[in-house]
Length: 333
Image (tube, rainbow, N blue to C red; front, side, top):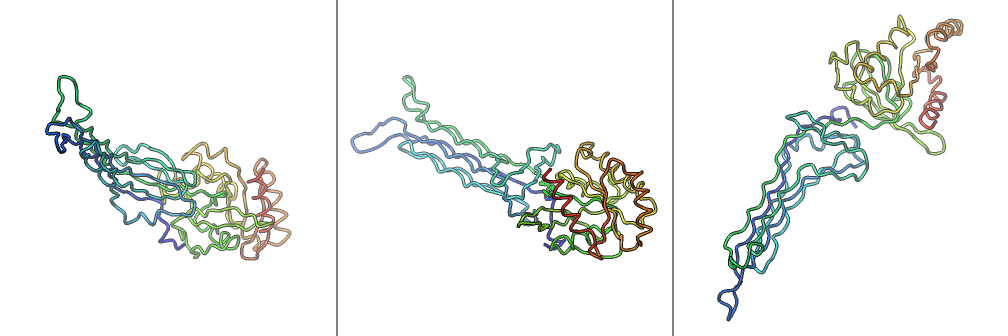
């Protein structure tokens, strides 16, 4: 999937169908000139549904679907015949889609399971025919109910990617490079900040034909929780990850300080982030010789007493098998 095809935010207008009107028909047939009321009910208007589809990874197919309208219900007929229901509209969305009311910002619901089906806009109820209004004092009512109107609303669909592991790090930390060597994903890689502007997903093949999903999230900067840089645009994607992989290059002036900034931004955005499993990965270790690695390990043992960490080199393919093992164990602990 190319970066341009990854769409995780769309606004659409949805309209359910209005109900059909009830019939005021009076029964007529040969030798029966003044039959009673037999007007049927109107059909209900079509619903607008959202359905989860595990095969979808993006909202790209809805990028140009600005209006989604269900069909109107048919009118009732004679002989108590009910009008046809309006055609329903089904919108398929990837798992992890959050539905919001555009005007109020209220979260209406979330789609998290494959095949999960929720009504977004309910069709209007069909009106009752005159047969329902007959009585001893009014045996030939010549009125019926009109159908109820459908619902019109503007909604926002936001995708929070469903991945097992989220890559967290500063811009240009090497997250895309790591994703490219762990998976078959082909993210954009270049030597400047904010190369990644959309989340990239990759499937890590593990032993015995098992696998897990890893997401490369656009780089965090200090103040991201307040909307700086790419702000909330990417932070919501991390909420779905069960494990967070913090990637810090070994040539960073202060590894502990950079890690603390990353954790602080996640905490300010959502304190529940601290409940997730964390792994610190020091990258670009091919730049150091064995003596420097030993010195660095002594420093890190003091700085990170409670956080597991490890060394890798994406370019030199060092430590990647061990990294897969650790992540697999964390996900299946």
